[in-house]
Length: 319
Image (cartoon, rainbow, N blue to C red):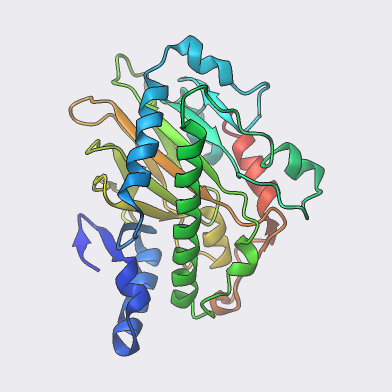
């Protein structure tokens, strides 16, 4: 791993192919990064560039449409998790108990592509497995689904790497994510015309699941994380590198050995438009998240929670 502005690169392919002492060294490095910032810049991901270019082609087209076009797929009621959210309808800082003006962003959100036959929980079917709402744009759903599936694969690879860094069997987390309820969100942050006190493009928050994979469009900066010293630092932006961060449930699994780091989006220096794709990897609806044996100490910081109900409660707190 190479250091860059306190956020470190992680070559996933190198990690997977390494053996012996080199593997041990990389495992220690990964564990230390997840203890320190909880943020990684992922190289060696093997995601086909065509898949990335395709999704950006339809996402860009969607955000360039009129507000009337986008509002055709607004959530049918408050609390519905998918569809188009216009600017001013969400405040992520609410999830941390901080009252702020609404975030200056708009988004399109969609959930799992399939409903497993074994799912019968009414809350699960009405929340995370609710139908996604698709815009009438040629190839939108096709390209979105291809990217979603590629993020599923990348997340599974990262979870296996995380298992090794936590002194677990490489496949330990497989049982908790084989019916995961992950969501994909496309975000657009227009140039700022006016900003209120305490208002941000996206307010300071942590992510709720196991991990998040973020892909910025072009070189649009603005993402910041709060380090252990309490300083806000910029996350390097590269359209060919994925940003991965630890989520709340991974912090709970590890009894805070790993950190779910506070982060936000601020206006970039040139006040340019910013776009990004965020894949929120969330364990199975019924997965019980409790302290791992390898992370037990004198005290367990959290009571066990179920992945799906935890996600639902956090999501609704932001509206």
